[in-house]
Image (cartoon, rainbow, N blue to C red; front, side, top):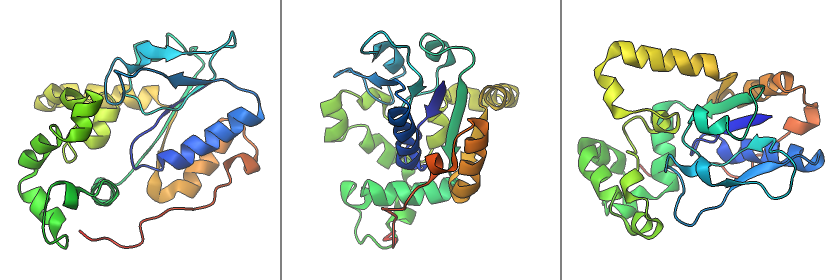
Length: 219
């Protein structure tokens, strides 16, 4: 049983493909999230987890906000908790390129646009909450900041705890204890080797081919 915390722009599609391929090969059940009104980063997503058929769920791979109490409702205590994170600045570059924020925020020219964004990040984040995509999906109130704890929000980070060093440490200690493995995008090969050993996979189960990678940066 595996819960994979799928973090945007952190090798998430690569890992999703690896787990999904393994599940198909071994006839395992992947828990899918079906809800027209709830999608990431709505914290209640896991309430809408539906399992077709009588077989128990073996894996959760969707983009979710980490909520252990909800996960335990559909996966057993023996579940392995796994995720991949990324160097924050490199992640921001990737987000900026992938979501074409230069065009979305009408920043001209695109060269140097990231610095313009960082100089007034709060205003741009506020604007992001009111984009057409958020309005159409009904997720404007859940929209996370692109620049403030983007990865932390996937782990269930609450803005209030930043005011308390002790609470922040407790939260980090809790995550360290709960997750069986946290890999790094910049060490993806080593991370895959560890995951293979952790889950007793075959070497062919973690083989990947790089199909998409940002070649140049415009920010």
